[in-house]
Every structure is written in structure tokens, then in C-alpha cells.
Length: 358
Image: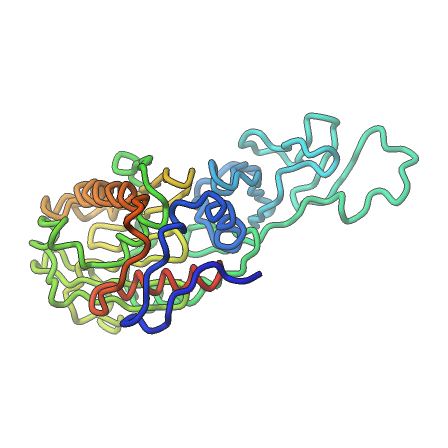
């Protein structure tokens, strides 16, 4: 199929994605298969599965709504389709510690590795059971304590995970604790991609995040383009805000304020001295997006070390400008824009990845 969108490799001459990417319902529907089916979605932590053998969820709830279930057996975690191979009833409705998956509709059972085990009333059925009667196994990826799932696994994110391992050598990942009091879920009136674009450039920081400019050195702000990802780094004005890393880490001799990792298409992992914040950007409609904001803290460091760069303040400032862009992107007088060669390489990289798929 011919690609609908084109973005030049040369940022100096390139136009941005055209406005119909953000406003055309057909494009939005096409993005499900073209972009998100092959992506890796962060589902939960392994510790969420403690004392459970079955953990049902929807892949991109409210958008793709694919019923899946994480299963735990003999210490191994797999992901299976949660749709019965008999008549498409949802099998697992609630978290449990049961040793079999059993459909409540007609009683078909499956082992935790997805193989059909029994089915009442099927005496005399020829060529039964066959492979098609088993549950489909879904690709999974494990990093630290996090579980990722992909429907097609066509987007490679291992290089960026390796980069995090090397660049943040010495970071105390094993001490991170989910802080539910600092975690939030927001619904904003914006296309999902506009939120990502805002994240991917520092151009707006002096204009939108005045508090943040007091804590980071804008002159040292860097953007690195990685495979299916972007890294932005900032050094800090005050050494008390510096991330503690091993001396032989990539930036071990610098006062690093933050590492902002974006992983295509919709995941942001932000590293600070106090811990990490994760933004999962979930499309709900062409002009509505859910932002899952997860906060993991290190127990010995105060998350409120700096009022000016309070992450909640920055989040609300970003939401305000992104929702304003959503109003403008529909204008008959706007078709596409241009890129700042100095400040918008991350946005250009994002658009190139999209135009390569659609």
C-alpha cells in the first residue's frame, strides 16, 4: 500500500506531517494496525502478579481493546489471547490464582500455556482438537521489573533499553517503589501524537516551563536520536539535584538533572535523582488521549527537592499548550509547518518513523 505521508530526511527542507494525520478519522483507524499493533506496550510490573496466575487486561484499553491475559506458571510469565477459541467468549474476567483457564460460556478449559485441555459436548467432532483450538501466545518482553506486550512485535526497542542500561549504570533500579500517591491518570482533549511532539523538543521550555529553566542548564540540553526512540538530557544548576551514577557510566562525571527517554510510539521514561516518572500515552479518539502518569521513587531521596521543576506543574503546563494546538490543528488555514533545525530534531525523527509506516 502506498504511503500517505512523506517527511524528507533533510530536516532543513522538510515539512511536518500534514494536519490530516491529526484530524482524519480514517488515518486514526489505520494507525491501530500500522503503528500500535507492532509497538511494545508497558503493561505492569512483575510484582503486580504476586500470588496470581491469571491477570486479564485490554491491550490499549479504549483504543484497540484486544483482550489478553498474563499467566504465571512455574515462575514463567506468558501472555495469551483471552478469547475462547470456541465461540469468542472472554475467558478470564478477573485476576485469580487458578491453575486452569476456564470459559464460563460452554466450559472449554485451557492450561496456562494456552493448550486446550477439555471441551464438553464435542464427542464425534472430527480433527479435534487441533492447533487452532489453542490460545494464541502473544509476544512479551521483560526489562527490569516491567512487562511489555506487543501484538506483532515489529518495532525493535531492545537498543534503547540497552542504552538505558549503559548510560544509567549505577542507577538504583532495584530500590524503586511505585508511589500511588504521586501517580495519576489524565484525559486530555488532544490527539496522542501532539502530546508526543511536545515532549520531543526543548524549544518550548523557556516559554512554557519557567520553573524548569531555574533548575536545568538550557545551554547543555541535548537531543540524541536513537533507533525507534529519542533521548533528551539536561544537566542541573544545583548539584543536590544530580542523578547518582557510577563513575564509568556514559555521563558519570557530569551533574545530570534528567534523562528523558521516548520510545516509539507512546512511552516516556524520565529519570531523576529522586526516581523515575513514566508517561504512557493512550489514544482514545482522534482528539482525546489518556495520559497514564506513574511515579517510582527512591526511598532515601525527597521527590519535592525543587518546587520550580515539580513534575506535576510541568505536566499541567504541557497539557495546556497541547490542547491549544489541538484546537488550532483543525483550522482551514493550517496544513503543515516546518522544523527548527536546532531544536526540533526529535519531532522530525518521530514524524519520519510515522511516515515510514503510513
